[in-house]
Structure formats: structure tokens, C-alpha cells
Amino acid sequence: MDARADSKLGFRPLYQQVREEITRHLASGRWQPGTMLPSEQELARELGVSQGTVRKALDAMTAERILVRRQGRGTFVAEYEESRILFQFFRLYPDSGERLFPVSKVLDVRSAAPSEEEREALELEPKAEVWRISRLRYHGSELIMREILSLPVAQFVDLGELEEIPNNVYRLYSQRWGITITRISEKLKAVAAGEADLAELGCAIGAPLLEIRRVAFDLNKRPVEYRRSRCLTDSMHYASDLS
Amino acid sequence: MDARADSKLGFRPLYQQVREEITRHLASGRWQPGTMLPSEQELARELGVSQGTVRKALDAMTAERILVRRQGRGTFVAEYEESRILFQFFRLYPDSGERLFPVSKVLDVRSAAPSEEEREALELEPKAEVWRISRLRYHGSELIMREILSLPVAQFVDLGELEEIPNNVYRLYSQRWGITITRISEKLKAVAAGEADLAELGCAIGAPLLEIRRVAFDLNKRPVEYRRSRCLTDSMHYASDLS
DNA sequence: AAGTGGTCTAGACCACCGG
DNA sequence: CGGTGGTCTAGACCACTTC
Image 1 (cartoon, chains in turn red, orange, purple, cyan):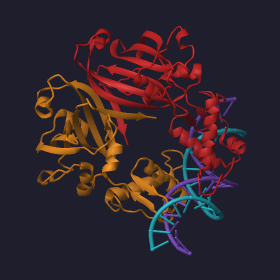
Image 2: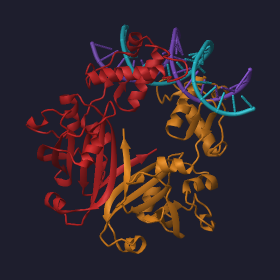
Image 3: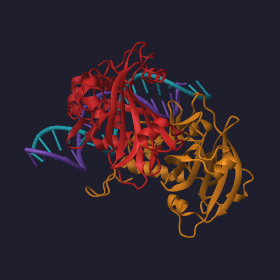
Image 4: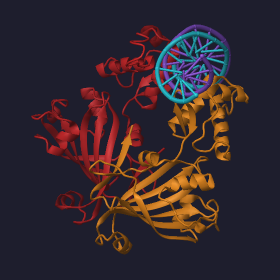
């Protein structure tokens, strides 16, 4: 690994290059979620840099929750266990405090030509298609939201042939297509319930709902999932911590 | 600075202790927002640790935006410029994209006995009092929200005697009372507009509003501001990025 | 040129985990 | 016990800013 490509222009730190090299291995599937990486010493030898440089790269990826480090055991590729999804990606909490991973009930799965909104969010080619998964979600027995997930057909091949869409879709993306979600961007609005909300959520027309539009990005920072959710927030809230 | 207080129990890394020492200097007012800290070498000498250890502490505080580092110039105590507030603490964006620091119009300032909600959020003593600041906020000429700020009288002495409450209150907290806001926790719900919303926002009764309940924390992680906002989100949205 | 933070190295030792 | 990550050190050199 070159220490310096050029002295002034386009200078990129070594640990960044190490980071990219590791990311390539992750994206190629050489290191699957749950597996242990080689030790710092070993990686340093392999890449021809010092252990401290490898450490800096690993620390950065740990901060972004792509890796998990456990003292005395090793460095692992992060998995999509329920608890991680719950704490990292799911921001809806019951007011009472106790948390559950919400259960899903799939209503419909089909492919279609994308709307303008979907095309823009997913940065799709003109003639690309999308899958649309429509589902309801429950917190225990209480219905809390309805949502529609949009996924590019090109990346999620044969999704329509699945017998069942599991509750934890990010684990599915990872296991079946090798797609790793690392970042999420959400936009929230308060909206009035319409006909469709009445039909699926059973709330009154005009009732206030929290609408969440989510775009999820993979390891290469490309958008791979677009999701529109409408939530009943009588006994739930969306938590956001800024620091 | 002791390298090791005890070998097994209550072990705390040196860089954590350095961090706490620096935080104490910030809280004491020795280093005001905007001032430059001593160089890494100098701090290392002062504290009797290596430069690398000081660096690790400074890096952590930079990640939390308490400090700002500028290569070739020095390390500075972060200030509350409009731009920082806008990007770090204010998550309401116009759908169109361009951003402005919202203008405020104060309606009322008075002290009162806290409600149960305020007492809990601010962790107040039984007989403590709070200031309540009621204001409207505009994005350009467009009214976007109404909010009530609650502040402990004990910490914000003589707030009632101010001639004017400025737009950027976090800078005021810092300059007048030496209170530094470092973290914010928000809870969001969709609610239906009531009588008060009709009167102040001019929206119809029952119209959907985004309600934000914010608690702001100081350097010592103590809650110092509680804020309830109700926002019109027809042409605005709340942005949340998770990674 | 002098001073700052940023990167990189090499090596020592500590805390933690598992067999 | 051996292996892993976590901390700490000392020193070299690079990049950026200011004078």
C-alpha cells in the first residue's frame, strides 16, 4: 500500500486507503456479517502498514457501526440482530418506555414502474423497475403504522419469488443479496389521514399521522431502499438525539 | 495526572481524565467560547502526559463538537454561530432546500411554578421555579411554529430583566450565564391543532402539527432547557440522519 | 521560517477473553 | 496461558496557516 501517491494534490491518508481496502473486502463478500477479521497485527502485515494505522481505520469503521470490536476476542463484521436495528435504525418508541421489535404483516408485494418520487430517491435509470412491499406493523397487538417499501428490481432479483418477507428486512438484504445498510436519512412531516389510512389503520379521516420518508444507503453510499411510513403517535413518539 | 489510580477496579483511561480536566476548565470559564487552547505539546507538558494522549482527548471532544480544530492554526472552544445552530441543533428544513436561520417574535416572558412535565424534564427541586418564554418563529415571512421554552430560574438569574430575548438563545445562555449546550434530545409526535394553535398559528382546529419536545443538556450533562414546539409542516420537514 | 494540527511508526505494557 | 483489542509513549515527518 503506497504511503503517498503524490506529495501535494489529492493526498489521502494511509488509514483511509486501509479503510477502503477493508470496505472492498466487505462488499465482495469475502468477510460476511458475523465473521471475525484478521487481527490488527495480521492486517498490518498483509497491507504493509503499521498496527496503529490499521487501528485508526478499524476505529473509524467501528464508530460507523460497520464493525464491532470486542476486547480480548477480536474484530467482527456487524450483523443485523433485532437489537441493533431497534437501537440504531428504529426511532419510534412507546411513551411508556419498554421497547419491542415491531411485528410486520405483509399486505402486498409487486413490481411496478417507479413514480417520480421513487425514481429520484433511488437514483434510478429511466426504464428501471421497483418492487413495492406494502405492510402493517404492530407493537405487540397494537397497530402502529403502515408503510410501503420500494426496492430497485435490478438489485433485488427474484424478490417476488420469496415465499415470505421476514420481519427484519435488513438482515434479508444482507443474507440474500449481500447488501449492507450503513446509513439512513429520514424526513418527517405531520399529515392528515386519508382514505387509504382509514382503510388500513382504521383511523378517522383527517386524524394527525407522522409521515416518515426514509432512504437507506449501502456500503458504497448508494440509495437502495425507499420507504414511506405513516404512524399513529397517540401512544408512541419518534426520538431524535443530536450531539 | 495519575497514570493509574488502581490496577483493576474503577480503571479509567488517562485520556478520559485529561478530557475531564479540560471540561472543568471550560465549565469554570477559564477558556471561553472562541478562544484558542494551548497547543497539544503545551497541554501535554502541563498535564504530565504524552502528546498522543492529549490528542486522543481533544479528538473525542472535537467529535462531540465541543472543540473545533483547525490545522495550522490551533484548537478552539466551539461558538454558537448561526451556522452551527442551524446544522447541529435545528432539524427543520424547507422542502425546497435553501436554509435560513428562523426569526423569532417573543410573545411573553414570565416566571411560574413548574408543571409536572417541566419538573420531570428539568429534574427540578420541589419548590424551584421556571421562566417561560413563549414565541413564534418565521422562515422569512412565513410563520412556521410556536414554542414555549422553560428554563430553571435558579440557573438563569435575572432573565426577566432582559430588555430583549435574542433570536439565538444558545449564544445568550453561553455569554450571559456561561451555560454551554452540548446535547439535545427530542421527542416528536403528530398532533391535532387546538384553540391555542388556532389563535397563534392561524391554522384550523384539528389540522396536523408536528410537536417537538426538546430537552437540552449542558457540559455536565444536566438538563437546562425544556422546549415544546408545534410546527406547520406543509412546506417544511424534520430531517433525521442515522448512522 | 516558525508554529500548529495531522499522519505514521515502533514498541511497551495493560485489560479482557477463552481454553 | 496465549491471543485479542485498549492504552500510552516518544519521535519523525507531513500539511496547513501565518508572519
